[in-house]
Length: 105
Image (cartoon, rainbow, N blue to C red):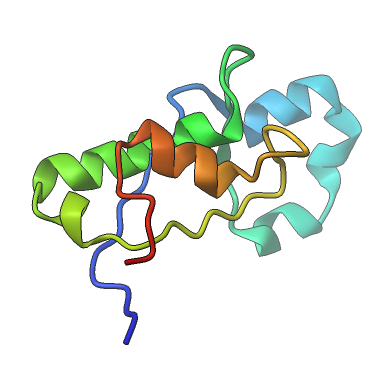
């Protein structure tokens, strides 16, 4: 049986606030939509980063907090609105980068 027993998150340091947005698009400040969204800032990935870098940093954080997990993880499920490459799949790249087992036995 598989289960999610631990999670971790990584957010890039660079942010883009609503005020930053309004500087670029001042006409949007009057919109009634902004207060309803509940979004005040967004974390922006750097030009030298790819989506798997974020996954790697979150996974390393998790594995550093609980080193025995490295031997217990059977597979990685990675989802993102963007991908690093068309092939190979990012989850496999991450699994290798993290030094996790890669057999099904």
